[in-house]
Length: 265
Image (tube, rainbow, N blue to C red; front, top):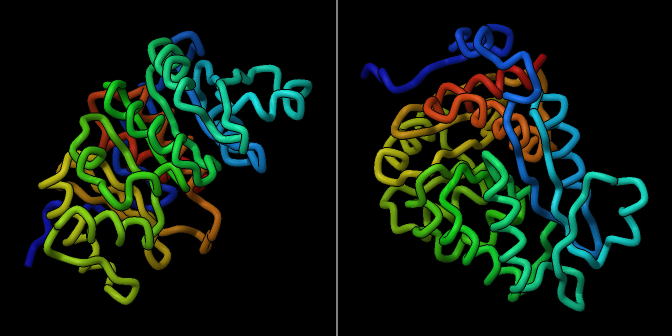
């Protein structure tokens, strides 16, 4: 069986080299990214995402954190903005207005994780994805807020999920899609499943299985073999993908695939 939808990429030889040649040389035209995440007990994910986005060549990046940690990080994270937080240090419902204001400024929003588990934050996340129509990327526990009722997220335009295989398993299971994802499945079977899944649902998927990073978008699937098995990968790849997608907004599959190859250099 010929799988014309499957594109295999070498880490040192991007499938779409024209994207490399057309990158903006001036930071003014390299895009604006908002990174949202953190809680009172940790903010490593948004901090890592900011650093990775800068290395990836973003024009300007903003980080939005809960104001519960303003005294902790304000002195050495001068670029951070702060939104209202709950007594436990997660985002409050009223933070939605500030999320939308920052999103209006940006070309894309990355929900980078470390959000904690909080019912009020869950309401903010659900409201935000319903009101914001631009490019949106989610990773780590930001994706977990939608694992039980994922259809709104999966059907949303301009959405990319950078998730673990366990998270993908839950999203597919709870979406009602007929083919399950298992940890034992072969790469070929997972590629087939993602081809069919993203032909039904709008959201783009980036996931790691075995030693491969898989990108699926609109029925097209690419695989890129990692030079080494990296356990910690989601935030870095999410930031990288954000920048490339911003700079190539009409070529989601090509941009997301190229971002994986660039991470390997």
